[in-house]
Image 1 (cartoon, rainbow, N blue to C red):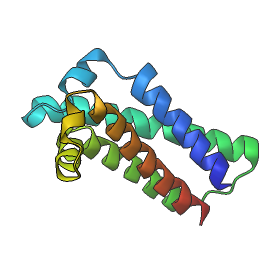
Image 2 (image 1 turned 180 degrees about the vertical axis):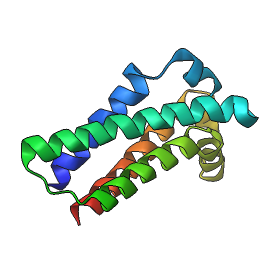
Image 3 (image 1 turned 90 degrees about the vertical axis):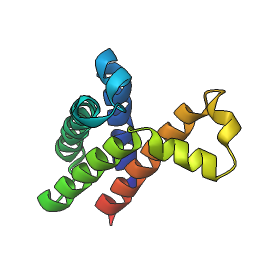
Length: 130
């Protein structure tokens, strides 16, 4: 069940991050104050909705019996971690404190950002599998 969950959550992430994220969200989600948080939270909510729909689809098609409260907790985790990671400063902090500061200027932050998102999704899949 873990592999199925992880795969569906990853597909949900790709759909929400690339196919459904607006240009406005991508450009402003790390901005200061409410002008940054509003598009950030709208984008994170898209992740919650898409991943929630895929979990429901998995439950119907694959016969999963996901308890409601753990599923909601996993979706909250996905939305919250996505919102924090997308503020961009956590990724930049990580890179500057782990010896990767030079890689930032060469596009490395996008890779670290995606790795952080996938790690958070795997935590959610492990939680739901337990």
